Image (cartoon, rainbow, N blue to C red; front, side, top):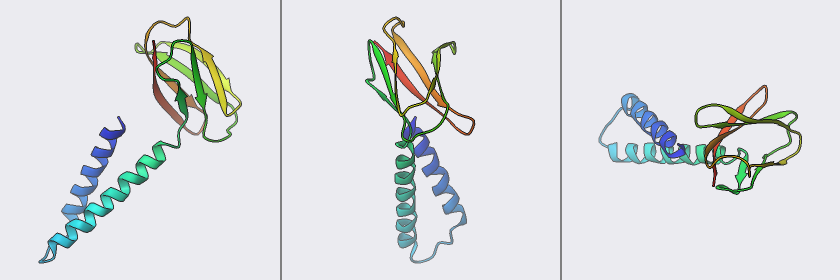
Length: 127
């Protein structure tokens, strides 16, 4: 998903810059400047994505550990199965939390952390 998003943004940015750019004899230099801009943009997006919450171990048989990047009051943790059914909901008040997943069925789950301002979702695999 991250790679797909990066490719989409890079292509969109490059096509926008190409449509607005005026090309002259130094077009090779212009292309290199645009390529550097796209590279810098991709790195910034990757850094931003790494700031989200962390899931470990993934995959797991017994426990789902969640680490938040910063203290935030009343973060809601929700876990959904692939059909969209919510199978777990709790409130996280610390930087780290654990959920017992030993009774869950084997499969893929979506872990959503949210508050009134933002929401992040990651994939979790139960073995």
